[in-house]
Image (cartoon, rainbow, N blue to C red; front, side, top):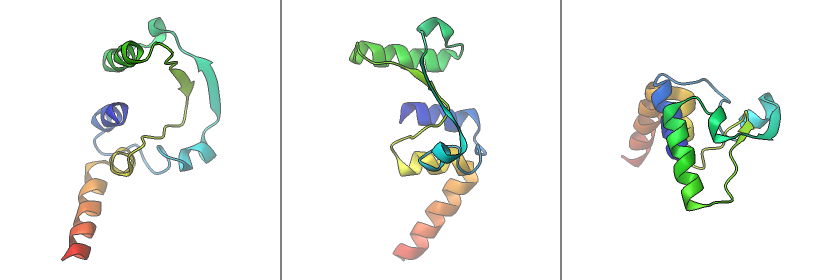
Length: 97
């Protein structure tokens, strides 16, 4: 979920539909080549990957071009940005009331 949050912060107005989650598999091809720590240029991403390596020495970061955030809310924020999150939250609140 932390990587998903970083992707949201990277583009707070959204990456667009089908940029995260299962739908992104239908759009992007998958390249399963492992990435070494030296190949990661983003400092925040490098920090996250090193933390994951410490927790699990067998962790392999690969170059999958699709991304499944494992959280529906994070996925909505990645795809729709802040406006999409506000509209979704408003819809849920209207349904609850």
